[in-house]
Image (cartoon, rainbow, N blue to C red; front, side):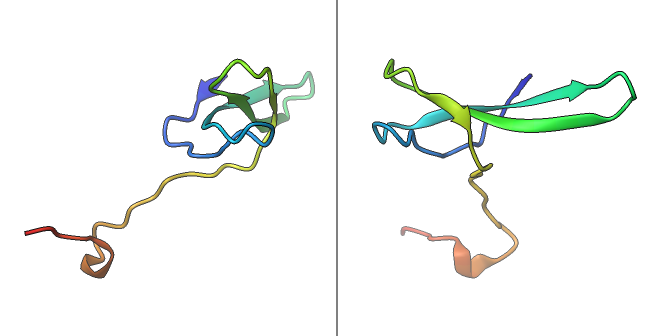
Length: 69
């Protein structure tokens, strides 16, 4: 299991920010499968499969960077 540090999804039950981890399993035949699992950051108890909603930033595109002077 590996935590996704730049995951920015929300809990579908209470709307609070959620955490996510990638769980990778290897089967006896050598194949692997990965699943992204989310967990609520509050104690509402929700957890389940989620899409990988990642925060991205493209610093190579100056039009996407806001500069405050």
